[in-house]
Amino acid sequence: MERLKSAVSATDLTPGQEAWRALQIMSEFVYATEKLRPVQPAVSIFGSARLRNDNPWYERTVAISRLLSDSGFNVISGGGPGIMEAANVGAFGGKSLSIGLNIQLPHEQHGNPWQDMGISFKYFFNRKLAFVRSSMALICMPGGFGTLDELTEALTLIQTGKARRMPIILVGREFWSGLHDWMRATLLRDKLISPGDIELMQIMEEPQEIVDAIFDAYESHGSHPTRAERQQLLTL
Image: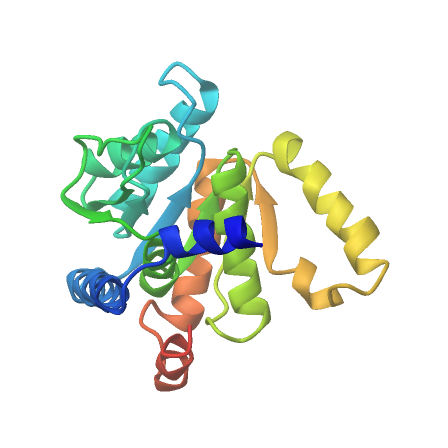
């Protein structure tokens, strides 16, 4: 017990340190919110940092992003390598803004150079909040734990009414259908989610199909949140 108490006390932060950390979090949140406020309409693209530029998914991400950019949508990525880089490459070559929300990590992720605007985050939850608050659609390319985290976070926020409903497009039937089928066969079967929750996601393949679906949502709902939706975003 004494050893446990000693270990806990050795890692405790002082009240001043705790307060300073809270101020850092608030400062990062306010800065990102103000910086991204005029960036509308915008679409966020998630995906693996590990895929190289000779991977077919990298090439497809560039194509999707370029189409979005030339169609008037600003494109937001995680700002790092892999699929994030591909999203920025496509948007950077197009007509609209290429935006990167980079995260400071000890072992990976440096901001890629194909960004018109870049924001560096220390705290993951501020970064994930920025993705959802700033986007009117989310595109998930193949990825690992980080991509799954971003996907399920967005689904949870929309499912619980904390965020406005928006298109969530999973690109690649072969990659995503196993997860989608498991959700339907297990989560829905056991009533751990509602039937409408599955409909929050769409699996698509072709870049033009994806952009058309986002355009349909844009024309139906617009890119800017309504007054009620802005109130929702305040409770994220």
